[in-house]
Image (tube, rainbow, N blue to C red; front, side):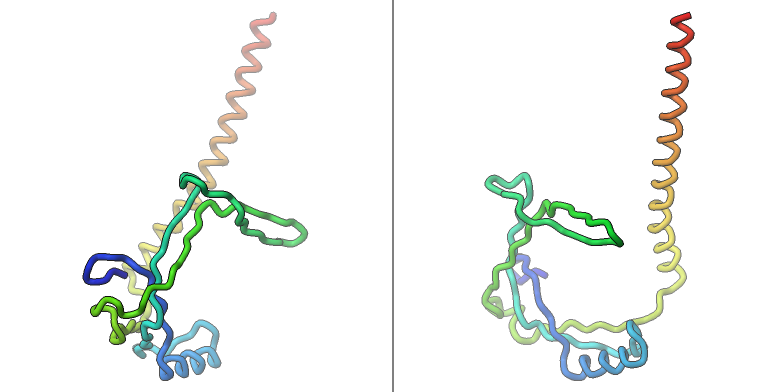
Length: 154
């Protein structure tokens, strides 16, 4: 979000009572379901400024990791970027005062959106195939080079 002066900030929205009650009713029917064409309204509750630090930032020390246990295997990855939120005075800018409302209306995806999603998901499969092809070609090259070195020795 940005205020009238162009300063960017993060907003925390909470649902109005009516929207919260409707979401609870939706979830009782089925998790992830929603009432078609119902407008879920949320009120801006808090505003935050942010600062970003990563490995390139001077004085940044790596101390945060993401961990997951899958089956009997434990995985961890370092989190290379840290985002720090600092609460800013709500409504300090008149454009973001108490009247900011986020309205969400759910609808079914149209055919164009569905086809775009399929196009976005397709490259992941292609990359996996490319990795396999690269591995196979590398193996062929290494066996070819070892064959040629054997011929040189004869």
